[in-house]
Image (cartoon, rainbow, N blue to C red; front, side, top):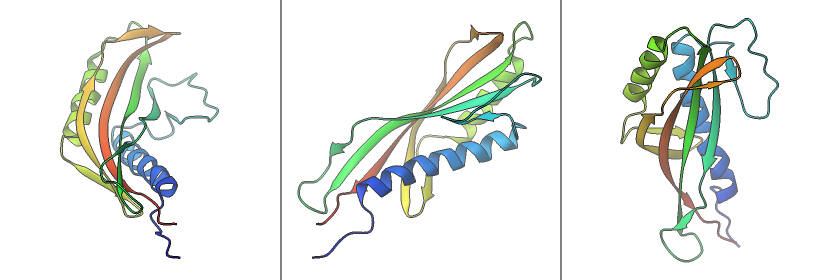
Length: 151
């Protein structure tokens, strides 16, 4: 029996890696090197003047084509939370949001290990206070097609 190397479980992790690699590159270009909180990692922002956290939230895939070896479409979003100390204004946050909208533009694609994701849209939410930080959350919506395994 023939097996497809692009198994959906492998592609799911490649989708996440494509998004996280793009986000890391973007954040480091904005001066966040060493100030990124990754999911399920210990992180202490004390002493920092800015930091970002990243979360990948996939939706349940939908069927695009039927049968073994068909396609499933995954949609979801990557959330980047920009954080600065409270009472310092939001100018820097707006600059980062503008830069992100310039990087993660609708139609742009990113690929990791042969799996491609396409950006659908990017937007920033309202600011809010969280602990002693002022935060704005950037949402990057995406889609990707996954090849279903042949068993």
